[in-house]
Image 1 (cartoon, one colour):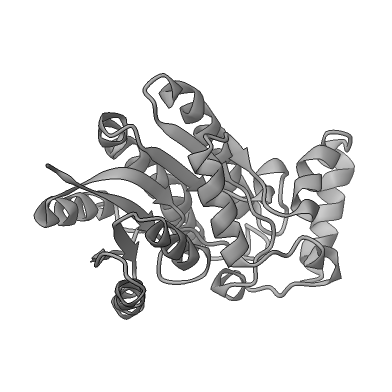
Image 2 (cartoon, helix red, strand yellow):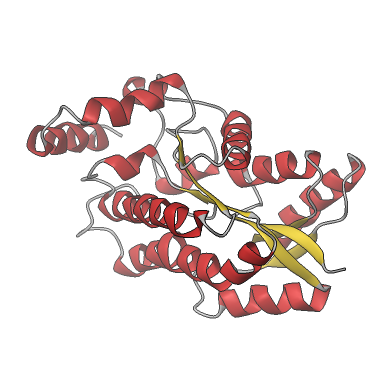
Length: 258
């Protein structure tokens, strides 16, 4: 019998690490992907110490065009197939798009969009065969334009749109597909992006552990979109009533204050 794994990208810290903990606690064997092997090894040891099965550890930089091939080869070498896929890896950068380094912004697209799309499509046959699940981590940023983080917001809009479409397309194959859209979460993501939480976002804050649990539970229930936290859930609702022109101005002012 083929052994199955839940493949989680960006698993070395933050939401990704907490997603790994939740899936492992629910009995899933894991394959962990991130750039930092030492972080992955430490997480794998933690999971084993808690009584879980030893994860497959795959150090990989998703900005590289051949990252999907590397991951697929590592899984084949381990003799496992993917029955659940969690595309969590992603990063953002604060600043005016025309002023930020172009290469760094293209790397953002490579991780947030290209790698997520590649893995979602690459392992779709396996997900269908095992009637598994796909969890793509988007953001409440997906619901609005983001001057001051223009490329990041755009990538998350793509993730939400793509995931909602796959939710419909794969439903008939017995595959659950969910977009997880958290608000601000205190993790290394914020440090890398270059901003700190302020009064305007504090009400949206939620811990990465709570986000991970909400994502897992939503996926298992077959939810199309999960927005964890009461404050964050208000964002998509309220945006229905706000025209884009004033919304752009408000977001722009908020980003400039960070």
